[in-house]
Length: 434
Image (tube, rainbow, N blue to C red; front, side):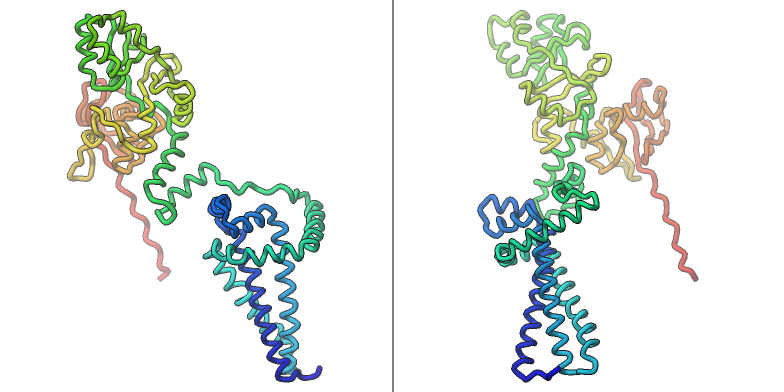
């Protein structure tokens, strides 16, 4: 093999550098396009971003894109091998083959694979956008070859029982999106936006009985009471909606907004008959209905509140549209209800005195605890369920990872309880081997 002159050596080195750069370009572009944030790119494409539109075209036919990248990568690597071998023979005719083989392998791995793919993995959107024009141009030039090789690969893939036209979905399930939002620390979206999305996703996991106003706390008026007593109760209602019943709470007549009731009170001809005509018929909700389903039903039936009933039709409580919305955006209404902070009293030993009527989910939110929420909705209810008997003063029970001690009771229910977390077991020391 004849030695190269100085001009040829320079040209060969320039060609080798260009080919190595091209190899890195194909490798990096392949990684970036497949790892790109598809939701962001799709959003930018809808706004007319040309680079994003080109990337979306590649993603619609990833098989053709990969064929083009492989053609380009293999072509430049083979040409680089030929040129590197010729240069190696020029410098060392005796060991040229070994030098070209091992030397070029290391160079291609570093500059043609590892480095560009690492950069592309760290900055996929940036690399994909910058390389989109060159890839689109090459796709136009090599379109016949790409299509032919793509068809051949589809035939071979089909022989293994794989349908090349069907791919696994790239979308996120609700659970995957929930997990992604929990792990999101504010680098992509503000914390308040993340909390809103988590609130929406959690609606399907929460039932109406978990957020309802319990039966015992309902502000209800017996329509058979003395008329003056009814007027007084209507005038002094602390809630926006009044429940009316006939003798027994399970015999509900319906609802009335306090604003409408107070307007009736101002009329001279206000009577029980006028009041009964203004009451809206009750709307009933099964106790296990999820908040997401109920929100959709409120919207469909143009309702704003409903009565929770169990499997026997007995009234368990009341839930309003505001209650569901507060699960998404947090507390935003002004009410006369007891604040959860007034139901929790921290003790010096790290325990808490909890009101028996405190809602378990509110306690968990306030204290970052994990008391069970798949049963009773109040501290009193969960203690009685675990106890299986009438509560006794100073009685201690275990509820999951927590210990509860009854500190005040009326013999039938828990008025207050002292609750604390179990001490965490010490982890055994690792054997050092010495």
